[in-house]
Image (cartoon, rainbow, N blue to C red; front, side, top):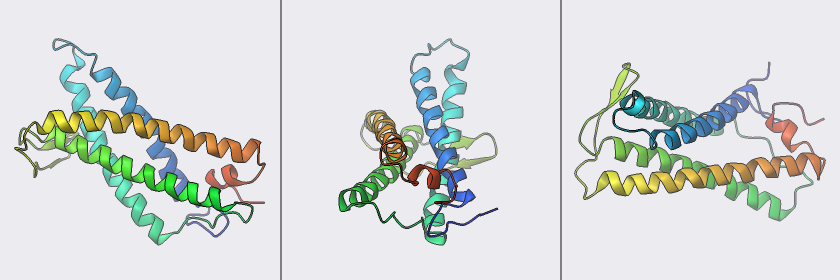
Length: 184
């Protein structure tokens, strides 16, 4: 089993983290859209946000591990067939995804702790409220959180479409490498 990345392919840890983050982001997006439709007397009105916050904290931890892992096990080198536009686009797209994801997580933290209360993570541990009392903190962070959530969905769809373009149009091994297969 190939745990670390090689110059030609992604290792299983990178692949696992990639897909875990992708599925979690889409799940959180759906949960967030559903949460805002709940009425005060709905059974899930208080439970859904607690689940959303807990998963958000765990996602933040996974994202930090993901960034560290990129230094421990650098991603494969770009294919020789990639032109300058493709190489630069890939770098910018990945950077945008990381920045937007971390910004969503930070804005979620600012929403959740605006009242000075910690975030309980499934009853396992608490994340203290360290930034509170800013004018309209929850509302401002909430608007940012919503727009960034849509942005990460759009960016990730474009990311997926680019991978499919590489696979079906360019007929290169980009998608296979992203799935942990060899570049052969």
